[in-house]
Image (cartoon, rainbow, N blue to C red; front, side, top):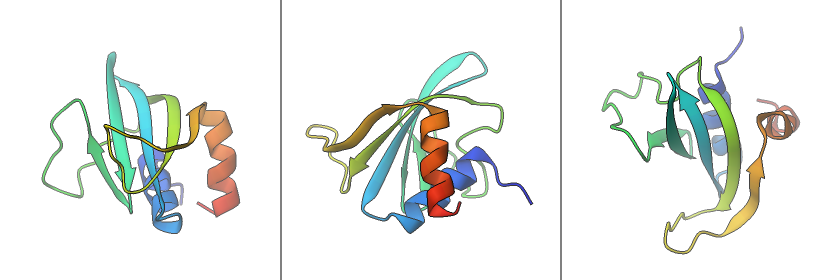
Amino acid sequence: MSHSIGQRLEQYTIKCPNEVLLVSIEAEGQPDQIAIFKGFSSSLMNPTSFDPDMPVLPDDAIVQSVDRLESPYNPNHPRFVEQGLSWLEFQRLLDAAGV
């Protein structure tokens, strides 16, 4: 069974609980930024559904970049582990983590 991009990213943050991911995407022609931490996703630019079964990151989204940050995330003082990773670069980390 193939997992969606959002599910893989959420699983990564479960396996790496000291990291927060900030994922810049384009969905339906609109930009968005998704924060993912300990298996949960939240849009920083659009409303997020209260239903945890509703994906925040659509399957057809185009991932523009992924930033890895140390948790806890403080938007006023972010502590970057890596910044501006392409989807291809980040997929290698997902594969290494087994997700």
